[in-house]
Length: 193
Length: 193
Image 1 (cartoon, rainbow over the protein chains, first blue to last red):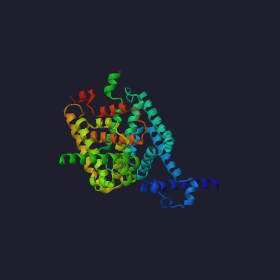
Image 2 (cartoon, each protein chain N blue to C red; image 1 turned 180 degrees about the vertical axis):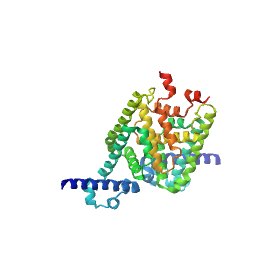
Image 3 (cartoon, rainbow over the protein chains, first blue to last red; image 1 turned 135 degrees about the vertical axis):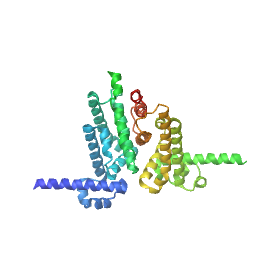
Image 4 (cartoon, chains in turn green, cyan; image 1 turned 90 degrees about the vertical axis):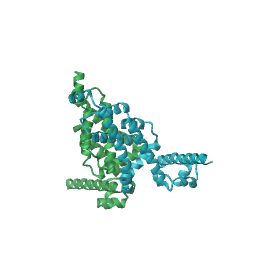
């Protein structure tokens, strides 16, 4: 029954990824030893490394999954919506983001490989801003590249802040300000028509 | 000659702090061993620990110095100006900020002690925003607490981004957007008068 078998493989792969995320969140990348991974996935090292050649491949699969998810949300609903959804992300998700940030700082090889994903998110953000600008929603007096860089900076700030575990007061009001800053306001509409 | 002696002590203290900053930037907090500190300060461990009881006290002195500096810039010129000045900060300065962020996440004792400094910066930001609002510069339709939380989030994002060493495109335009978002616009003035 190859169909069941493929489903089972996918289910195990999912279980490895979810368990690895827990392990990275609780222990950091270095601290997530094979023994820890066995505990959090409930699988043997043989089963884990049947799906991923090594721990690094496992981490990269998680990070790529997250980057793809952010790009998809951006494409569909914009980076401010991706920020609103960050509120519901758990420590595992934030832990992967922080590990990506750490590697961007410390590992030039990782950085040159990862730039592709950053460009993917930046492109999705700019494309959506351009569409929204054409629809009259986004302001026209600032280049979409600048607006995209602005949103990306706030996004990074939100990830960094949430990862500290400190309460973020006034988050809804803050994100309204962020959204407003890229929108066409009645004022600029008057000015530009 | 007690005056010369006090000056010399202060000069050595400064040299310890500057060397320690280099050490933390290049090796991280854990990697900045006593041997590394001796190299970057050009002083013996005896001289170093004459000024600070231990490495942790040395790190805290640097972090507090930075927090005080940010609070002073905010008080005088606002958090957006503090952001503009981040461009000129070196890896040593950013490294201390990242280590503070890491400890906020991982060390509850550090966190409860450090909250005092975060509140100091938040208070300075809110006080300045309130003064600027009374002067008609800052918008009145959003509470200063929300504006302060917004600026603080962008500040965190900027620190996180600069620490990756990735180029930040359009930074001046981005900071103009940030500043504009807290300002009273001709539009809101028309609405509120």
